[in-house]
Length: 464
Image (cartoon, rainbow, N blue to C red; front, side, top):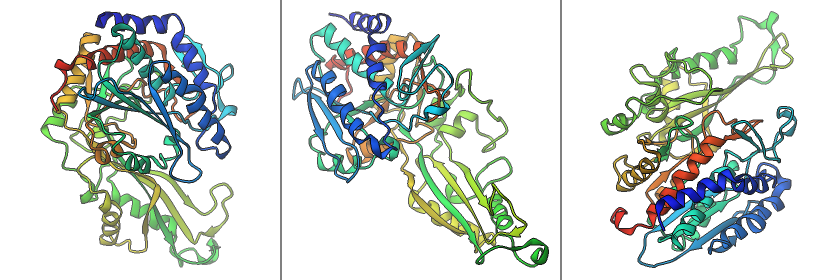
């Protein structure tokens, strides 16, 4: 019975093909939550695949219908060993985005797991089936080595994360007592660098919004009316140019956060964003002046124009269009008031002479920002566990650059949230050719097996 035995068990699981076999079954189930015809597959993933996998490890499983209509179910797997022991809550999602079958490179496909060199291809390998497969295997490794976990564990698998997690808040509110725990330890998103163990403690928020200039009914010939009628595309372009400076630095005062504290800057100091060999080259002169690239994505806000429409882009005509619109997004950190994001922009535009531009929130694009204190006892404990296995200090990020429904766990359930990602930034998540790196998967299995073992050492855990 030893920590080394648990880690060795996880290594064999990967080296002897167990990881590939389990993940292949899971990838083969086309759990596209964006496809309304996949409801039966979402349910099958939980009942026919995940429930038996947990039950083989002594978990008691319950499948809950979604409180919201037309939304996918939830699976809660519980292994409660000692009422006095620490209870860990974990999370994963079994749904994936659309397969995009026609766009994958020749020789690979979304619903069949294929390994080429260090890359393991298949929809969900990185987001999120591969990640919760790793964590489940780490639980198995700890049980095999110790005969038990040595702590209590509750795992929630949802089937709607890729469509905004409908019903997740409602089920957590309804089952708040059932979901009670001491800490959330879960996996999603990318590492800072492929082979660098990483922790992140929350997420940036995301607020999507529409900016519209609607001046009149119908277009008018540009020869007859050019120079007489205001062009909404020009007005909107000028309005957008007031939101940031020429290098993307934010000019809306309320959007400039105050949470890039000395403690946050200290954990980010010296880190470099590394998306792997297929990553785009970072534009060093883009974003807030005076900040390092790692501070811009993990400690600051960023504004993006995602789409701009004026007239008919596919078939332009010689007419002044009546309307222009831009779909935009603010990725924001803790310290930005989400309730004031849209009103602040509207005030800014009015102040700069663009009263004719209306701003409205796109509700489907909203996630709140969260961040656990970088010096929280559970952060320090988890970092020490990963360092013990890896032989080097892991990266601690105050929050993920992207967004997850972490506010439900952090705010609603009141849990300290520690995320340990098993992917990397160039995994083609949400795109054709999605893949997981085999060396990262094997490394993650080792790290999580060690962490699951350490959770069973009651004397080493943070005091509640």
